Amino acid sequence: MLEIKCNDLTIKYSIHHNFFKTEYVRGINKISVEIKEGERVGILGKNGSGKSTFLRTLAGVYKPKHGSLKISPNIKTLFDLSNGLDVDASAYENIKLLMTVHDIPFSEYQDLVQYVENFTELGNDLKRPVRTYSTGMKLRFIFSVSTFNLKKAILIMDEIINAGDKYFRLKAQKKINQLVDNSGILILASHSIAVLENYCQRGLVFNNGEIIFDGLINDAIKFYQNLK
Amino acid sequence: MLNLFDDIILGLNKKLFWINYGFNDIKKNYRRKFLGQFWITINALLFILAIYFVFRYALADSYDNYLIYLSIGYIIWLYMSGCINSSSTLFFQSRTFLLNKYWPLSTFVLRSWFRELLVFSHNIIIIPFIFLYYGMWPGLGSLLISITGLLLMLFTSFWVIILISITATRFPDLSEIISSLMRIFFFISPIMWVERSFNEFTNILLMVNPFAYFIKIIRDPLLGYPVPIDAWVISLCIAITVMFIALILLKFNQHKITYWL
Image (cartoon, rainbow over all chains, first blue to last red; front, top):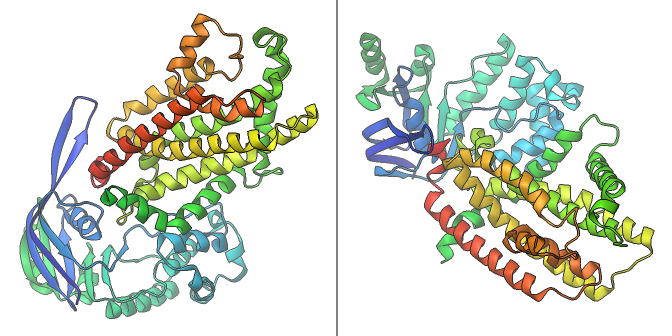
């Protein structure tokens, strides 16, 4: 049973300006929220409101010093998809690298290669260095590796893929729908109202590091729009 | 006690990551170059030969095995300085990984350590050729003692990377201090000059220089000198001390590093 339980969760960053001067900045403040299996939660908020800090804390990047966080261990993050990509290497070489970033076992290497070939439809271009790809081609490639064979997990996404040509967007959309359907819990931060309405049922509105609204996604969107 | 090693164990389990990225770090630098990663070997060899021809009379007058002495010392130095210099910016360079999901810190330490080991394995090729050129064979016993010393250095370097990478992430000034110190240490270590020409000053330099002990335990047996017991004892003490400090630093800071990036 997947679940997330935060109680008074507070994250403070220490910014060390130099050897002697340290400044503390609050990322999130006393967040208490409970998310159960099957929930699709949209995160709304202005830049700097604490959305990314919250997502990263759930992802295990920041260990909370104040408050408590209980979260099931199977977590999959889709933040920066190009993380770990070596643009001078070919796509095939990058598959070997990226699968270690995404914890894909080597026994699934052949399946992954086949999946990437089919999904990207890049053919012989996969042998070329990734730096020679257009933005769309690169996106197709990294998207395919990042979304390969995702098991039931807590899926945490910071903005959804919304680039590439129309054909790829449709294909990616289909894949994301599949991922969302398979995920145990979805946490999605986005500035796109359409995306949030499409994928989420519940909405959390962040402001100054605090959750100021927790309710149905449509109500959360209305609340957020009035806030602006 | 076991708890002190939890990050290291998790990092070791990520072996596919650090082995693949370690190899790729080398490939990346030498991709599209005709001689590929053998430029590592060529660069080291050119430096050794240049120093040998320019300084052999000035720094090692009448020392017959100067070329062997210089090459072993320099190749060990390249490894040690490579580990130390790369560790001061290690976590900053791994920032994109660390801020994307939870990673054991030792994963990136192992990547850096493995990469330096690969560089070292390219450089070490030079040594047998130099022995062959002189028609010398150090003997199996000496070779084994030297390899044991080498293993101790490799072991220590892993902990040194942990120690420096954590400290330099918290205090970034350290990376500048380290790069200055390493330049100085190169000149005060018995690499270009011969430690056999003892005088009071070289004695002091050797005593306060931790690198000198590791160079000694690896190089002396290969040159036919007796096993340097004192250097072995001190090297072991350094290894154990650094290991404990590194483990404690890692234990208390493993969850703080991402806050500092």
